[in-house]
Image 1 (cartoon, rainbow, N blue to C red):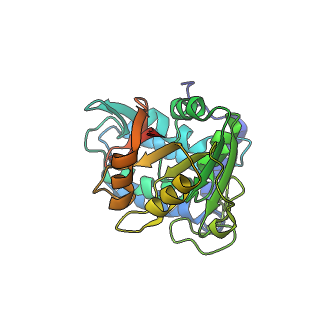
Image 2: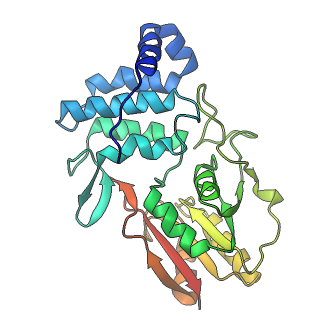
Amino acid sequence: MAEFVLTSERRTELAALLADEQRLNSEYPKVAEYLDAAPILPGTGDERADAAFDLRLLHYLTGDRSISTNPYWDIVAPSVSEHDGRRVVNGGRATGSARLGFAQTILQSAYAYAIPSPETIDWMARFCAGRTVVELGAGRGYWASRLRDAGLTVEAYDSHPPDRAENVSFTKTAGQPDVWFPVAPSSNAPAHSPDDVLFLCWPPGWDNPMASDALAAFESTGGSHLVYIGEPQGGRTADTPFFDALTSGWTLNSEDPHYVSWWNLTDTAQTWVRR
């Protein structure tokens, strides 16, 4: 990955923003909240790396889309390391840090729960080539935007599109886009085509039937290709009937070995094919 270097003009812009506390709080309240809390939260023990992370977060969360097509990844990528055979954002420390954990909540709300690394987008694009990707529970449409830029045809739906309705997971926040890709209400989703790929990225867990309902509807139209990004059964995503349906009627096609997660989560990226 190329070294992160700010232009002198951008440094001047950021210095002026940091010097104007009232402007920072009104235009970028989540950035201000993080910068207020970060100095008092335990870091990874590498002060230089922690400071570099803070600078990346400041730069990308206060910049427009011309700065990066994948700011989420650009913020976290230098903090990724391998641990127990997984690629995780932990700042080089097996147990991460409270400071990273706070940044995690802000970045997940601004972008998505799952991290779309370039390798995972490429892996998914190969599986979905020639098919329309239908993402249900798309949130801000961040993954949909990355898949579109990879050349895929994508439709995105959510029960509460953040630019149209109150969404507790993706709240309207000053200084942040409501959506990165057009997200339509789930009620407007047309019937699936058998050739579609159903994409479920961090569907709600805790016995919420969204995942199993979506899979059942997809099966009823003859759908046969699924991408699931989330935690295993018993975790924070999807419901038991969803996993039961996978076990009884689907075959695991592949699991992305390059998928990147936060150190404190157990999510993976999987493709499934119906038996």
